[in-house]
Image (cartoon, helix red, strand yellow):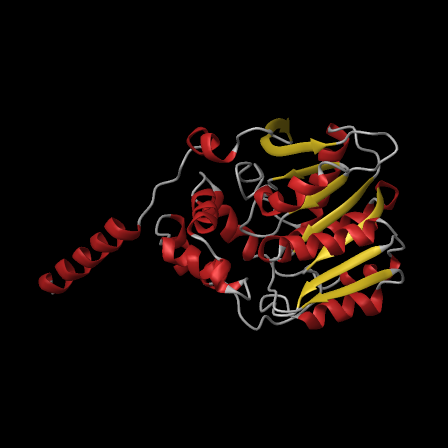
Length: 309
């Protein structure tokens, strides 16, 4: 028995040695991930990390972009680098992710995120915008539109969540986060290869997954509080009562989807297309769950065409 206990202790010690990571402070991560034009705004008991770029003309509505689970505002870097010469672009690290960190009250319901976006827009003087979101961000975007329709002129849904569905494949971190007891291990043992596997899972072309990209996802996951917040968020059951509201959305809507999305299958895009009364559906071939990252130029061309309508 003593030998067994010693063996188990030694095994755990090795796991912690090679795969255990302590939380990283916001100040530590700022130098790399909050360079110009990043800003922080004191809101809802948090220091919210955001970027406000581009042309600020009263005649042009700003574009507000919301990222998905486990991601950050950086997922829209390529789009912003182009669009900022034509429009005002705002994006933020939503609570639980990036440099913003957890909600103080640990409420990760979609309703809470919707109100967070409303507070963010008001704090930045935005009365009406073009609103877009990917995955969880897409779910927040369309539910925001149903609650605050007067604040949304057009809607962009990128592989958006919201309908009941079954993933063909989900990132390993998402799967572990749903397993009671075992998920607590994620708060201190987070192997980098898990981040690599999770990012590769949402790309159709894994050759596009670079070390720099994995570093960003991995290092921001280590932001103090984010690992616990990810578990708290993923454990919440999907609200199966909200999606009928999609039929009430009157705003012109772009439904943009990667045909090879394994997390939220393309069949969900078809459901949006069927339920939205005023939408444009575009399916991108050989693209996964994050078109703005995996195929930024091609997906941006689709966005620009939609904005001109």
